[in-house]
Length: 292
Image 1 (cartoon, rainbow, N blue to C red):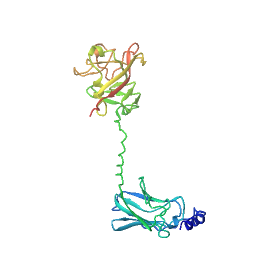
Image 2 (image 1 turned 90 degrees about the vertical axis):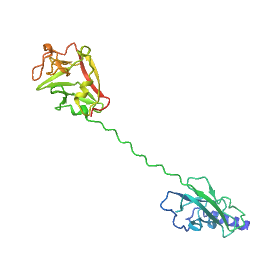
Image 3 (image 1 turned 180 degrees about the vertical axis):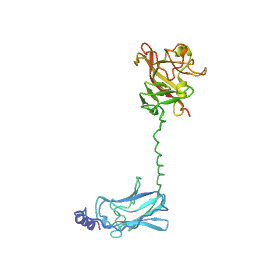
Image 4 (image 1 turned 90 degrees about the horizontal axis):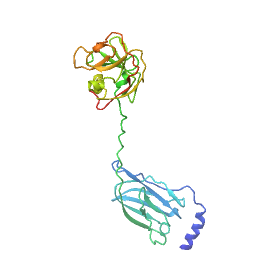
């Protein structure tokens, strides 16, 4: 028998690589559960190798014989999580599979690997289990952060009203930082434009500029941060300082004209004081909780 097998090896070995001849049954998918593919590797003499897999008494897939030596044979068999048995056969010579085996995708277990030369029987049966890993849930894409328009709506010809300042408005040369930062803020009161805010009076009135962000209303942060520098912005007239004396009702902050005695109102009136020598505000950033 061994001599006959060696003769076949010499003859058939020359034909390695020919098209495989196999008969495969439909794949087994239980209730559309996740499955793993069954793969078959053939070493020598694949023309005598057949196999079948059963789930209980139900045969669910099978394959062979094959013609391609030293190659992985394609199958349509897929297995869900469960217990199975495989039967590997060599009904022609009862010699075993000559180095071939069946493998479940994603595992290292080689089924029928012990069914080898000089098996002395037609078939070999082996029980095995399949555990399909639980698929990871598809991650929910993180939505891109959205930002309120904030200072982006206070540019160009658009002015943003400041609440409780008796109709003063703020406008930005441009907006940065997703609309949270106003570059070179300008103040308008009534029909008068060109007001340039300074930090001149802040030490005297004992106030931060948080009220400014709050006065701008919905979509702005609650904490004000400013950048300031001496002579950073030139203006023939228009220097403003924070105060309460230029408003009709005491206690409300507003931007007052530094050139008017007693901080008189400059609404609809010409501005009088130049910016030279003062720390003008070049940036206003409103951060912290968004005003609702």
